[in-house]
Structures are given as structure tokens and as C-alpha cells.
Length: 212
Image 1: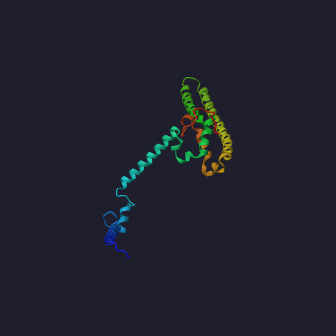
Image 2: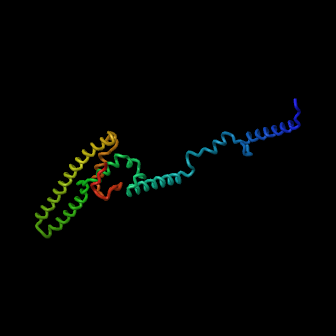
């Protein structure tokens, strides 16, 4: 066996390294004792009920309001990527584009009602100028015209939905026209709104651009 004069020194160095490692394991390797489990859990856990509930509710409402404002702005400008999830559904985008591409009689219902109200006030004023019977006849004629226009508009929108429903089933399947999808009411409500007032904003500035 060969004698090694440095063997004793190596053993001392190894023993010192072993002791240092053991101390680091006990202290967490950062020069401080390892915290107990309860202390560590207390440091990571957050209170379920905030101390200032009023401020917490106010902050939550502000976040919700900011999100809703951003979504409305996206719908007003036509930014589909930032609209609410329901407005980003592919069949709803198709419904909007289809309704916006056609001339819907029902969207002129509100202007027609305005005309009827103006005619009513005009006939009331005309009774002092012309024959009351004539003024009343004009008023009744306006009412008949407006109601006839509304009925024709409803029929036109019903025929539109029948054709649109077939296209939706062919393109997206039955789920696009299921009762829970509310596609029918969505199409009707958009057809009733004047085109420039519609939200989300139409993707095309003019009619006639039909979706593919």
C-alpha cells in the first residue's frame, strides 16, 4: 500500500464540505432557517374576504365596466376580435352579413311611425283650416298605409329568415339554428334596426355584399 501524505488533508476538506452542505440543507441554502409548513402556507395564502369590501366591490365594478366599454367600442367600430364571445360565433357573423346585404322593409318601420305621428299632428292642425272630414280621412289613410307597410315588412322578414335558415344549416349545421342559439330573434332584431344604427357595425358600407 502506498502512503499518500495529502490523504489526511483531502479527508479534512471533504468533511468540511459535507458539514457545509448539511448546514445549507438545514437553513434552506440562503443563510436562514427553513420556515415551518404553517408559516409558509400563511405567506402564500390570501384572505378569501378582503378587508375593505366596499373598495373591492368598487374595483370589480370598474373592471367590469371597462371590459364592457371596450367590447361596445369593438362592436361600434366592427372589431370582431374584441367583441363579446357571442358576437364572434361564425353563424352570427354570417347572419349579420346576410341581413346587412339585403334591403329589409322592416327596418323602415320606425321612420314610418314617425311619419304617421307627424301626419296625425298635421291633421289635427288642418281641422282648423280645411274640412274636418277631409283632415280625418287623410289621417286614417296614413294609419292604413303605415300598418300595411308593417305587415308587408313582417312577411318580407319571415321569408328572409326561411332562406337564411337553410343556408345556416348547410354551412354550420343544426346547432346554428337550435333554440338555444337564438339565431331567429337575432336576425329579426337586426332586420328591424336601421342599417346605420346597427351594432355590431356592418362590415360592408353598402348593400349587396353577400356572405360566402
